Image 1: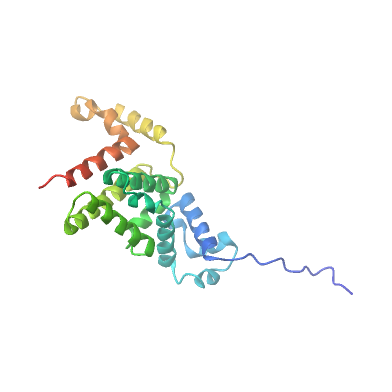
Image 2: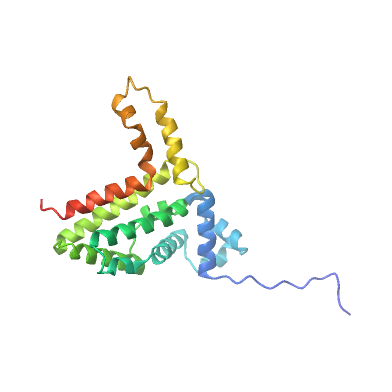
Length: 226
C-alpha cells in the first residue's frame, strides 16, 4: 500500500562550476563584493555550502574563476587584427572591458583585488604586448606600456563605478553625467572659479568620451621618444 503522506524527493538541481559563477555574479550585481559569500552563493543555487567547496576551496578561488570568465568573454582576437592600427586595437579592447564591467560593477573590485594570472589573463597580456610591439616599441618598453594601459583602464573604470556609492546596476551614462552636472552647479564659483568654469567637462569624467580621450593620449605618448 502506498504511503500517500510521504512525498518523493524532487530531482536534484544540477550543480556545476558555471552555475556557481552565475550565482556569484548575480550577487555581485545586486550587493557588491561583500554579498558574494560562499554561504549566499550556496543559497542562491539551492545547495549547502559544502557543495560549493567541492568545486572551489574558498571564496578567493571563486573570485579568480570569475575574473577569468569575464576576461575570457572578451574579444581577444581584436588585438591580433593586424589590418587595424595598433592604437585602434587597444582602444577596442579597452572599450569592450569597460562595457562588460559597467554591466557588472560589483566585479570591478575583483580585478583590483588580486593577481590576474589565469590563462585568459595571460593571453590578453600577450596580445597587448603584440599590439604594442606592432607600434614599434622595444620589448622592455612594451612591457612598461602594457602596465600603463592596464592601470589606466582599470583605474578609470574603478573611479567611474565608485562615483555611485550604492551597489547594484549603474544608471545610464547620460543620467550619471547629469547628476554630476547638478552637483557641480552647486559649487560656489567665487570660491572655485576654475572648477566652475569647466564644470561640464568635470561632470563628464564618467563618460565614454573622457575614457577614450585619456587612453588615446596615453597611447600617443608611447609613440614619441622620451
